[in-house]
Image (spheres, helix red, strand yellow):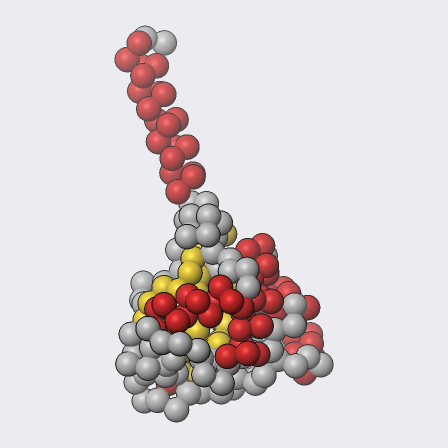
Length: 212
C-alpha cells in the first residue's frame, strides 16, 4: 500500500471512530452520558398496553394518564398513548409548570434517575407535576416494569414512533428531561441522569426562575 493510500485509510478510520463516539450520547453538566437512541420504530407495531402491562400497572401505584386542561399549553399537538393502558392525551393539552422526562426501559441512566424524579414528584408535584414519556422503545413493557420496580407513580405515556423527534422535546439521547413553564416555554432541564430530588429542584428553580 502506498503512502497516500495509507494516509487515506487512516483518515477514514479516524472519521469512523469519531462518528461512533458521537452516537454514544452527549456529556451532561454532571459528566454522565445518556444512552444513544436507535432508529425510529413503527409505532403501529409496538403495543404499549399488553395484557401483562395492564395487569402490572393496575397492581402498582402508577397514576392514570389524563389529558391536561389547556387547548394549547405550548407543546406540539401529538397524541400520546398511555403506557400500560389508559386514556391517551394530546401533548398540547399539558400546561406548565411541568417536568417531562424522556426515557427507555434498557437505559441504565434512566433507571438510575427514576428515584430522584419520584422523590421530587412526591415533594413538589403539587407545584410542578412530572410526567414520563417512553420514547422510541420497541419493548415498552420493560420500561413500565423498571419504573414500577423503582417506585414511580407519576403518569407515563409512550411515543414508540418517535413523533416527538424534531420538535421541542427532541431526545438526542436518553434520559432527557425538559421543563415547560407556565408561559409555554420549553427548556432542556438535564441531559443525563439526575441523582437526587434536590438536584431536580435546583435545576427546575434555575430554569423557571422561581423558588419551590
